[in-house]
Structure formats: C-alpha cells, structure tokens
Amino acid sequence: MAKDDISKLSFEEAIKSLTGIVSNIEAGKTPLEDSLTQYEKGMALIKHCRDILDKAEKRIENISQSKEDSSQNK
Image 1: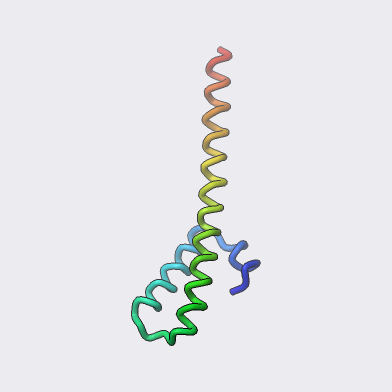
Image 2: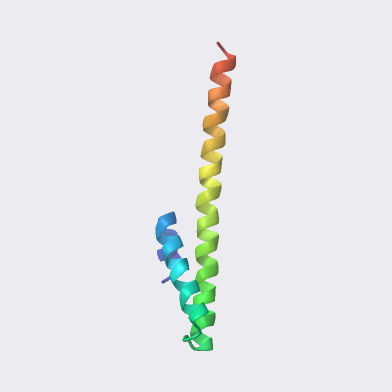
C-alpha cells in the first residue's frame, strides 16, 4: 500500500490494517524483510491516524469555542 493509498483510508480502515500488521508480526511467521516492510507501513498508518485525530480535535475545539462565544454574547 503506497503512502497515497494510506492517506485515503478512514480512521477505522487504518486501525484495521494496523491491527492486521501487528498480528502478522507478533505471529512470528513473517520473514524479517517482510516484517520490516510491514513495520514501515504500520508507522505510516500510525501517522495517518494521528493526523486524523488531530484534525478531529481541532474541529471539536472550534465547535466548543464557537459555542462559548455564542453563549457569552447572550
């Protein structure tokens, strides 16, 4: 999966993919080179999930701030 493909995943899809990677690596049945490739992909998925969460947090902060502003103006 290319980085562009990862950026198109929803949070839930990225978590599901990450869970699969962790399971495969923990099973110990994956050759070392494949494990390293999967680890790199996992790190990209983690970054993508963090980006999604950061955006969601900013949206919540904006919503909360606009609610506070509107209630103070009353």
